[in-house]
Image (tube, rainbow, N blue to C red; front, side, top):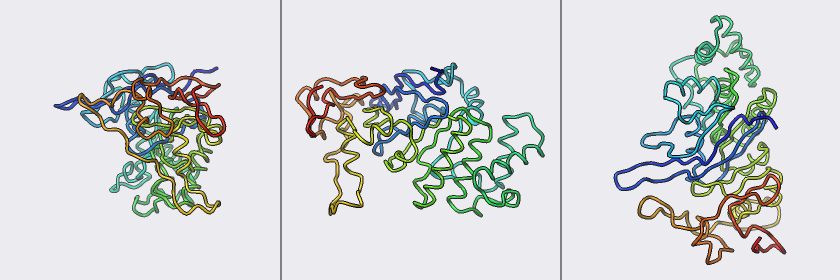
Length: 333
């Protein structure tokens, strides 16, 4: 097999404070191949966006990487200096945020912003960069791109701005694209268009994609594989179709059960009882499985021993010793 575009191994992100060091991302391991979309899903506060920020070197102080490593191709990037990391961002790694105005300067025309980015990473003239920017906008689905390239961000709708941001993120032909909730603020019909555009552009270019979302519908439409995160850890990692058809971890099953179903006559939404466990003294979670207090199949040992993320089937990893399902009941594997 070819070398993955992104390889994350035992990543740990923490926030040192005066009282304790709070571990927000703990022992996260995954990889993404060229042209592959890895969906990262979980509740708010699971550590999805922090993982993406750590990879791209945009952790807010005092957050820092406290362990593990991040490799882009064969190069380790988590230990690069801020100046070296700035050269990687934009050129080798692109980023699409939830709010497109986070990436677009409202005081500059979109064409100027794309042209500047292209010329930062490629030795081309301004005229060549402008033509490249027009081609990118057309590829991203902006109608009349040649006329609209001199427009300001506020002159575009939310969906059009997200298309502009996608063109901006891809203008340097990055190897990896990190998309953090790219469709959350958009109407459902526009979401579908952006998802289709993201898939098409990345498949055509062979770009690896890390898609961060809490929407299982977006995962179903977009991802090749899925990493389910809970309380800073990956609890299940599997091909998307397999995970959606047969989730193995109790938390993944609970997430799937909470998705509204249009047919079936259900009158109430299914909720996951309880709350994410709080950190104890020293800034760490209680010992044992972090989902145990909310898990319907938890055993006494679940609160005593921290489970490892282990391969239980080909291409499937689960952080639960009671993953096997028989007669709709989970029993020890």
